[in-house]
Image (cartoon, rainbow, N blue to C red):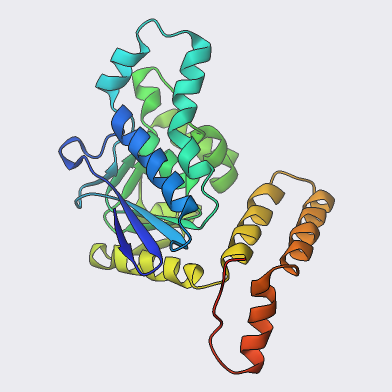
Length: 254
């Protein structure tokens, strides 16, 4: 991991295995995100892969096969969900910078992030169906919500690979950029978010994400509750004061 200003850059670092997600990598990612969540100096994060070949080729099948032997169904469900919980619980902005192939669990990691940048050479595939499996860490649900049920069915049931340009057209990613500019552009957008009032950023993210699972009326009530809460914070006083004094605000995060 490295830090640029208030942005943490997290790299999946197993380039010799196309950044396949091992048990150790999964634990390290979860611990890193939890530490960043508690760090007041960090306002946003970017998740990328080491090297220029792969973002992540998904779950390490060798490790999975060894761990899977004789595992009860209930334990298997807990095992699979643990991969996602670090990003799912991260309340600050997190952007995926997909620098190469993303397969299976690699696509699921990208879908967990708030926004996705893709290098022009990147590609996306859910290949589990070709091995008698299916996505099991939110892929069927998040992909269908992102690109629509029919397109998700086609992509998952064929296991075909989708180019970066097609991913952009489908709405799977938000930005496609040259490989050389990928990290710079992803970090620049993350830095814009990290420069805002921390409590307001977390509250707005929560309103959008949690509201998506609610009815419109309930979502608006959630928004109103969070917006009312923000009026009680010190940063809500600092923002207007800085505007009137024609200076940059100094956020306290409270």
